[in-house]
Length: 252
Ligand code: NAD
Image (tube, rainbow, N blue to C red; front, side):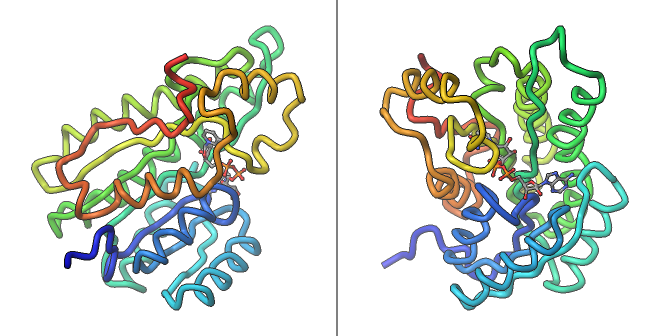
C-alpha cells in the first residue's frame, strides 16, 4: 500500500516556527518524516521547540536565529540548511505579525513593519531558496496568508495588504518556477487560536465566531494538515492555489 503524505528524506525550512501555527507545522512535517530548520527571531524559543519536536518525532530539527526582513539573514539561513542537511525541499513562509489600527491612527512605522515581515520576508526567503530548488528540479513553497488578505479586514489595512500581496506573490512565483518542478501555494487561515489572537477584544472574537459557519475557531493543527499536504509529493499538480482553511469564513 502507498504511504500517503510521506515527507521522508525531505528537508524543510519553517520561518516563525518557534510557536503558534509555525510550531504545529514543524511538528506535523517532522511527524511526516521531514528534517526541519526552524528560522525565527526568538532564538531561545526556537531552540526549545526544536528540541521538543526532535525528542517527540526522532527527526533532526535545528533552530536558527533568522530575521526574515534581512535578505542576508535569509541567504545565510538557506546556506546553513544546505550545509547541515545537504538540500532544501520545502520552504514554509509562516513568520508574520499584526499591528492593527484604523487607518487614521495607523503609523507609518506599523505599516512598514507589517509589510516588511509578512511580505518582504517571504520574498527574501523565497529568493534565497529558489536557486537550490531550481538546481535540484524539486521544490515546495507554502506561504501562510490569511482570510484578511482574501476578504479585507477593518483595522488591518497593513495586515490585509501584506496577506493579499502574498497571494499575488504566490501566483507570480508559481508561474516563474513551475517548469522546474517547484510548486508555490498559499494557505489562508481563518481565526486560529494562538498568541497572535489571544489578546483580541471579546467583541472581535464574537464577530469572528459569528462569521465562521463551522461554529468554532481553528487550531494550529488545522493549518498544519493543509501545509503538509501542499508540501507533499502528492500535491505535485497544485500550484498558484490558495487553500482557505477558515471554517468557511471567507465565503460569508
Ligand atoms: P505567532 O505570533 O504565534 O507566531 C509568529 C512567529 O513568527 C513567532 O515565532 C515570531 O517570533 C516569528 N517572527 C516574527 N517576526 C519575525 C521575523 N522578522 N523573522 C523571523 N521570525 C519572525 O503567530 P501565529 O498566529 O502562529 O501566526 C503564524 C502565521 O499565521 C502568521 O503569518 C500569521 O499572519 C498567520 N495567520 C494567523 C492567524 C491566526 O488567527 N492566528 C490567522 C491567519 C493567518
